[in-house]
Length: 281
Picture 1: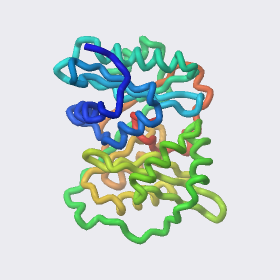
Picture 2: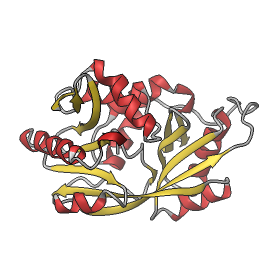
Picture 3: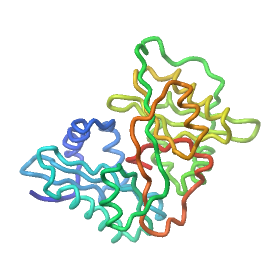
Picture 4: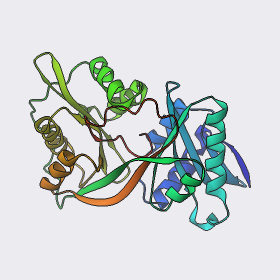
């Protein structure tokens, strides 16, 4: 077996692994990693077969994300995931990124703790399954989509770094799920979405108040034609949890946001209802 850089030709292999794992990523998501971090994505191969992956994505030089640590079920318990994770950390350390972040499952958290990661806050994945979504198509809306530049400016404050390249990509692939609410001259909230492998995924989801946050979720539900919607919400956001519960969502799993380093740019969690997803932050 050999650990090497991931290439575009490896995308089908990565997609196979996340499909087997029941993850929601698509080919477009893998290409976001490779386009944004061509030297920071890795595979473990056995012959010509991709049997493990790890990806990174840097946001300015402030912090970077580690994700997509996947191993073929037939190759587990051989240390492949640990080797891929260590290679990703080594790459980011060599690049001089001061803070590394990831969203850990309960099973993975102890390994990350051994590597110096500490908990920042808890995330809950909420899921909504609709029996029939055939008549749930895009409808008229009072939401006025503002200039993306205005969203990017607020998002930099909320997230802690510029991720306009990612948000622009989300908008290009799912313009129907790019939403914004403003009051007069002020942007009150915004949301983006992805058409994933098995579900539409809402995030980021940002609102300055509960009414704004709820109107964004409701419009997303109207625009989505999928029978499954997922949202990765901050557990500390009572507003987000209450809104999701009212609209029929239930908690599917728990994650812990973890970081290693100074965490000098934590962002504005008071405005954050839901993250993009554990793979992007």
